[in-house]
Length: 252
Image 1 (cartoon, one colour):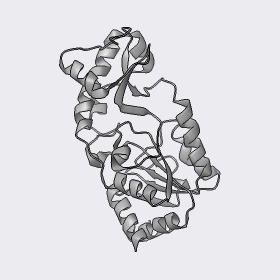
Image 2 (cartoon, one colour):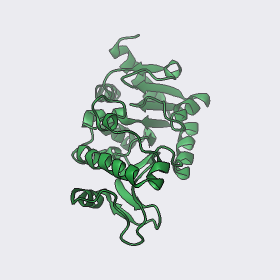
Image 3 (spheres, one colour):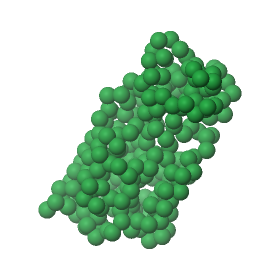
Image 4 (cartoon, helix red, strand yellow):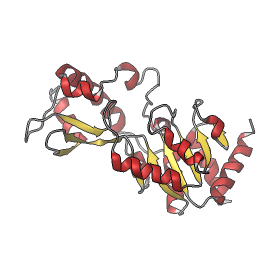
């Protein structure tokens, strides 16, 4: 592997020479903000089993289990702030380099950092929605109800099930967001992937699609992915360190 300095130089050169840059981010970009990723030992996701969408719809016991996990996750997310990697992506957008940002994350930290063209493939944890009538609430309102003792909150309008506006396992991906994400992948000549294991489909196919249509790839991830061999530059260092160094090089 080339030195960190050599890889930073190469990444900066690719960004400088690109006409259309797309970013693709996963849970790993937010770990430096204090949000555990799906596979971290001891994190919220490690201590609770996955409740599928079908279970949520059909089983009160599953909904209670799901909301117990979400109640704890809210506490972890509410104080999280964007980190350096989020900030650099927002800076690249302001500079006109980064055209769109596709994320698997539900934490809203890209928007907090100042990114505006964000495509949330897995929805957002910042609001909740009634699955029956579509009424929406800020997630803080539902958290208050959970902390007051509710275990399976239902809609005050129609008694339908309330669920965070996130995409659960077994739930259909949002069609418009997927269309926009693939459009970004097909139009870009450079894709920067940060913090995704690239194991959850169909989202994981987006970097592959970009590569298939001729885009170069920069991968920044702590652990190997199934498509590392496609990347022009690979980083296993912290995303904040990498993106800060890249931005510094671009400014020189």
